[in-house]
Length: 194
Length: 176
Image (cartoon, rainbow over all chains, first blue to last red; front, side, top):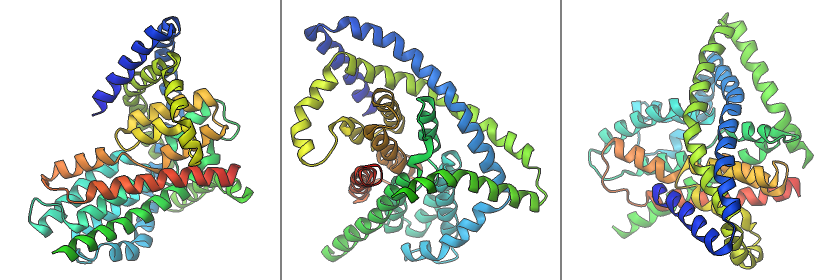
């Protein structure tokens, strides 16, 4: 799907330029923007190195574990079909915590582990209620600090690159809350039909 | 709403303070840990590079040809009526489909309109507050061999819609 969208953007742009007489601008844009994208990616290194470095310390210092403990009672309620001490619960919690701290690379393998444990619980190849809830929360990305966005804002000389931290947190909280609510709604709707 | 900008400003330094105090208390080698984690950051930035080049070039072609402005101009009357800034529509549409594509679009919007403009702030908030629904569903369901997703896609996309709407509303409220 991305392949199609990407190709169409370029094809449509070039075709439009032919009729609009803007080929000169397009030609310039191709060369210049590629260079700019490289400069940007290199610029991202600064904050990514800093944040992932700090997170490594936080992980070793047990700060992630504290957050996991705080979240536990709430998460247990969101997943009524998973027994409290089942390994699935542990993986779900670690996955949420890793996502919360922007550790996407660490979160994905934990998430897959969680899915495997949930599959053992349901024992079928149809998505279980817990799986859908888990993924619904994952897709709304509750992140403490949107590192990459801050880095990009820095690159384009924002007077306050971090000013969007609070708005992002509120928007993602709204996203997560609605994900849980919408998930409940569809679950109830489907179980009523049976 | 100025407390919210203050909160944003204090957040990172205070977090850093807590982390380092805790680590020193537990006698951890903070500096070594930092360097070790930082190496992953270098890898991450380089792995993003080809994605950003591909997507930013594509959007710049669309914009410089005049096609993007024509499209936005076409939809603008309806969107403005709904209170939706037409400039961020392409970003809102691609956000659930591809994370790196959305990152490229956010970058282009920040570059074109400025990071401290209304559009720049909405784009930043939108990019940070939702994740790539289709990618997540494909990866996770694929990894454990789930064949029927049931209502998972509907829930994910509706939650994205809420996130996008809230992004616009909250940026309007906080920054006016």
